[in-house]
Image 1 (spheres, rainbow, N blue to C red):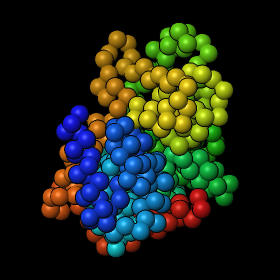
Image 2: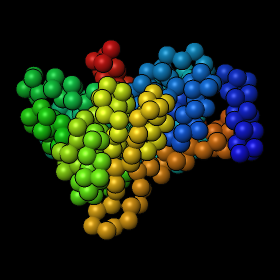
Image 3: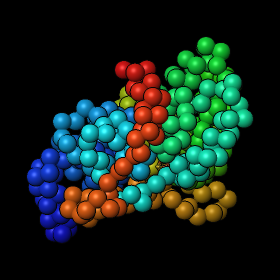
Length: 321
Ligand code: CIZ
Ligand code: SF4
């Protein structure tokens, strides 16, 4: 604990000295989110992180999250230095959607509008007509469907299936998934609901359809946080990364938040409701991002890729403005 306090003090001083600001995702560890708040940075979902980074006055952004979030920040703010606690922090959706294969899939369906989730590489974004985050995906697909557009959706198949069901849009799915949300178990959730009959169930739509079907509210991280404030229940069972409890508990200290169960049929969980890549954003790594050279920390995006990826990203930001 003493070492932690020392590290936090060092990070605070370094942020000031380097004209840097810490931007953290809701899925990072609680102490990282608290540090971002204490230092005038932001704690947010990926859409809000992108906006905050773009509008920040500081010259350097320290992005505590996963790699696509750093890349998005760099695409939006090429004049800023974007650093991450570690460049190893990736995402199973990004890994499961290589640009070359995805581009070939798109080429096979040239009459389709390509909509990709923010959890993708700059190269995949560059191939897309639209980038969306989970907080705005439903509205954008609704908009495209109302124009009679057929859609290629990638990479999260669960989120895609949920959106297709809600909107009735014609969607061809890339078969990717988030290793964290994919593990939530509807069978175990049923048992848990029986134990807490008055609890409301909050589910992120990257979870399997069987889990989404049991939800009292479905939405992105920011939407689930809002639901936890607006719903009258005292207890909530939450199917998303447990990092989100920091903000839920802060806003509603008198409510009880319980992790939704993971791992079906007696299997033990692998991620256990916490993203292993988000978990790489520790205090030591944040300090390293402020003290070490650019290797392993700084985000660079190739110029031509950047200009191509900016178009669908800007489209999303304009749409949501
Ligand atoms: O699962 C993720 O990585 C999410 C929810 C990102 C986001 O949009 O904030
Ligand atoms: Fe990717 Fe899932 Fe981790 Fe989010 S929680 S960064 S979608 S692996």
